[in-house]
Amino acid sequence: MGEIHDLHCTKCGYGIKANTGIGMLYSPENIFKDKQFLLDLVDDTKIADQTMDLLTKGYEINEDYGHEIYTCPNDFYLFDKFYFQLNGSNEFEPQYPCPYCQTTLRRLTFAKGSLGATRLKFVKEPKKYWHCPKCGNDELNEMAFGNWD
Ligand SMILES: [Zn+2]
Ligand SMILES: [Zn+2]
Image (cartoon, rainbow, N blue to C red; front, side, top):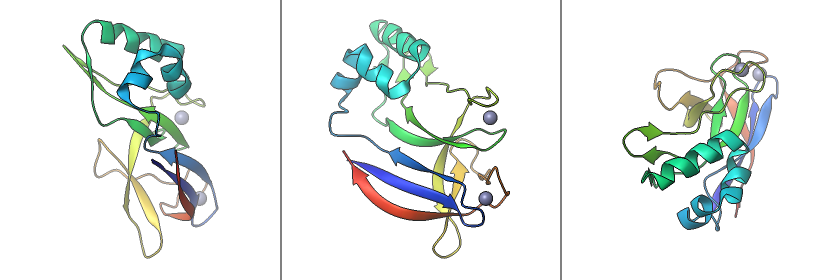
C-alpha cells in the first residue's frame, strides 16, 4: 500500500499531491513482464523499451522500487515519478527530464523541519535541501495524509 502526500510550501502554498510507494498490483512480475504496465508507470517509451531490453539481457530488479518524489535541481519544481533500479553489468535507473528545462530530475526524501513542518532533501546529495520554486522557503506542510492501493 502506498502513501498519499499533499505537500504545500508553508509560505506561499506551492505544492503537489504525490503518491509514493507501491500499489497492491505492483509485484515485479506484473510491472516488468508486461511493457504496458511499466509504460503506464514511467510514461516514457524510451525508458520502458530500454528496461525491457536490459531485462532480456539478464539485468535484475532492485527490490526498492515505487513512486517517489522528484525535483528538478535547476528550478525545483516537484514531481511524482516511478523509481526503480536494474543491476547487471551496469546499474540502470530511469532518468526523467524536467518538462520545463530538460534537466534530469533527482529523487527527494523527507527530512525534519520545524514543528509541524517537513523538509525534503536530495537522496544522493545528503546536504542539499529542496526549496520552493516560487518563494525560496524550504519548509512544507502536509495538508492531508492517507493511503492508496
Ligand atoms: Zn513557497
Ligand atoms: Zn527544470
